Length: 164
Image (spheres, rainbow, N blue to C red):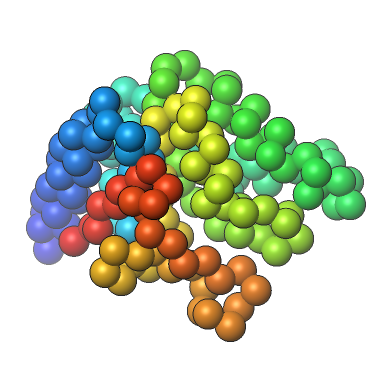
């Protein structure tokens, strides 16, 4: 059973890498990895980062650590700079981002999708989508929740890979 899961993960990493490489030179600069469990998506993004030899960033861990030094009242005005500092710390033109739930935290007053899209002007991005996919749309949180997001990656210069 464990071998089958490992084989599926390897297959998903290969397919996501192929899709990401096919986006090179196009207007698409963000590949969202959706579907499966959070741990499985993390495995895909981490495997892809390893395969294409680019930085893997656990945004939840690193951004929350950076924001601990910031007064809670100043976090909404500091979070974007902290996020960009994390991206700038690595080398190369691609970033693999995981555990993005912190970007949807209500108190930070962020538009997470726009932030990732804006960062794609400087970097090609692979990002683990913390919600679910349905058709050509990605969703975060139930529609009645204040953090609800619904969008089509293609309209934001991106694409998405649906994990098996």
